[in-house]
Length: 332
Image 1 (spheres, helix red, strand yellow):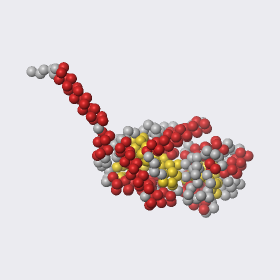
Image 2 (cartoon, rainbow, N blue to C red):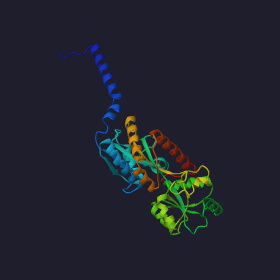
Image 3 (cartoon, one colour):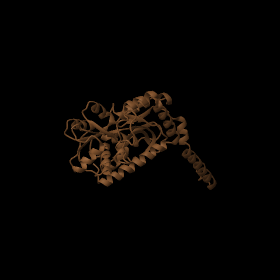
Image 4 (tube, helix red, strand yellow):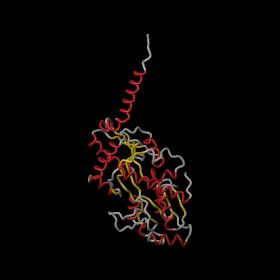
């Protein structure tokens, strides 16, 4: 004959369940960190093979594999300027076995320029490690009458709307970087968007368009060959490799719009795992062979704690949000 448990027994069972649940609630982060990594790590690279972001990840991943004792598998998921891969990464389990790489364009700018974005960079990711800053450069066709940034600004002001500027697409990072330049310097221009930096640079070389902003490494060879005239870089400090190239900020006080790359995890990634990953990624970036490869690619190696990367994301997100609202940009 079945009997209902007494109130005392029921209370005891309830207390036991509460203790068990409380134990599970508090245990996972530390327990997970001790067991991690328990299987191969997957790094979702939201860029095609051979892209700068892809090269960076593969250099660092080989070092992570050695230090963590597990293979690190690179998973290229290119599309929509990196948005496809980041959306996939945002949905991963926060157990430290799936990471991704974000950059200024798809983390800070895209939330304000894309009509439909499958992730919120402030809510859906855990910043792990900023690893590199990269430089955009402003270049013009050699036949243009302006040889310096002040001359370009002066000419554009004297010829409203006649300066033509090529970018890799409407709302892309180079477009927004030039818009920031335009707003702060106070001139007007005609935007000529292309589907990628390649055709944009090609038309400046061909003389169909006056100016372009693109990665320094993309423009450097053309500048050395005399096909374009490089006026400045967009960072707030000159590059060590080319100290003779000025920054736009030297002529437009306060201007800075540089790119960056950093490792991200899904939201909720336990702090012990974040800190270990940050430590190992920073260690890899400090290796001479990796720092040298980054410098060759026109990148500045960076080693900072996770908090600094998170602050950068928030600052840049706010910066480009303010810019897009100021210019009335309509998400594409």
